Length: 127
Image 1 (cartoon, rainbow, N blue to C red):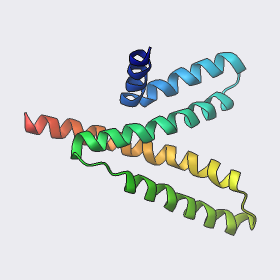
Image 2 (image 1 turned 180 degrees about the vertical axis):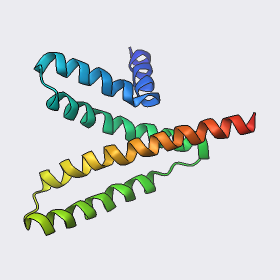
Image 3 (image 1 turned 45 degrees about the vertical axis):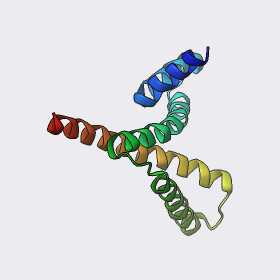
Image 4 (image 1 turned 90 degrees about the vertical axis):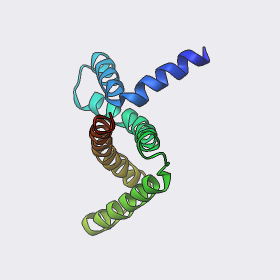
């Protein structure tokens, strides 16, 4: 059972957008709407993107860049809190974390795509 769960987690870590499509399709069938499944799929995929970007960094550069990912998360929190403060003058922790979580989805998606392209080019050049 542990090997099966590890295999499923490995598949989603290697292809996080597969998880996005599965969660989106499941939630769309369940709710019959579009916005709610998209939000649920983004939220589920963000956590897996953290793992995927970490793993790609280790595979390509042979170094974990956890500090860089945490720094990006904290800088995102600071930036989002400044923007919220300027716009609304009131910052709630839940709203700050929700917006930053979605910002991290965009940042990590871009990082994942860049690392995949860099990894393919690097592999082609070494062969």
